[in-house]
Image: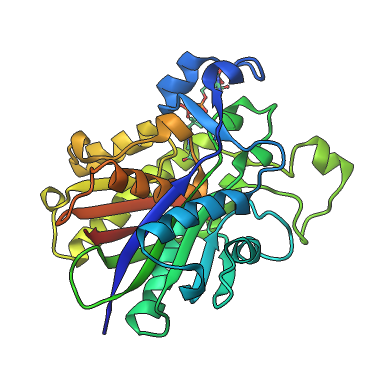
Length: 327
Ligand code: UT7
């Protein structure tokens, strides 16, 4: 059986910066509260007319360039997004059109913040078994369009962006995906949801007035679950690979809140200097958070040849997981 190699990564964020100061002019908040509770200083926001497939197009081009892969070589495109550009068709179709990746089969997955890691896992199955030769996995989100700008407890947390990776088969041991571990608990769906706007929910003026078409979250409960779940997903990945924390060179956690990240580090005794954090610049970009962080860590030289990289993710569903990469 082949191994799955990460041939190249890319990321892209919109140019427009929204600082905590800017938010304090929209809702009753301030930089001190946001920074001390979340570690976020600023986030990015799409320009008028800029869409999720536009962001995905730019991050994909960078990943394809790094992977020396042309658009017509792609066999599959998986787009992880909870903010699809249209109800129909999938954002992946719009991306395929922009890339002119005419030989690919394409589809979206919605696993909220954990979508990219789920996408990696799906792609891994096709590549290991040699059913596909080149797969593009993209996380792209326009979170600023689904936030309630009157709810200070959620609107300060999220931002827009996209990250991508091109995967292909190898017999070597460099830049290979060692394992992925996926978990879900649908019984807690109500702690983080957009209640209205699907086919199962009445689209009434009342629902609209309540902001049910926008993100609603029970922050404290989500925080607790995120720490617990990501910690256990890391432990399982390490245990199955017969590794311990000192074996890991770089830890890339989902970028939702630096307090969540430090709580996991404390629980697992993870040295803080091995953790990659960029939540200060982008906030929580949901399904784009892991691939943006992975790409930045690679391009900044924080991930080097021979490094073992541990990824942990968590989001609505709840769905969470981990991945191990031998760089
Ligand atoms: O991707 C996965 C999804 N999301 C997450 O992982 C996020 C998980 N949750 C969190 O990160 C944190 O729970 C939050 C950052 C959302 C909230 O932090 P917290 O320390 O749990 O604060 P809290 O919700 O307990 O709120 C404390 C106070 C409240 O005031 P009172 O009731 O104590 O008077 C809030 O009304 O802070 C108030 N507050 C704010 N104040 C200023 C809530 N949001 C804001 C705000 N600015 N933006």
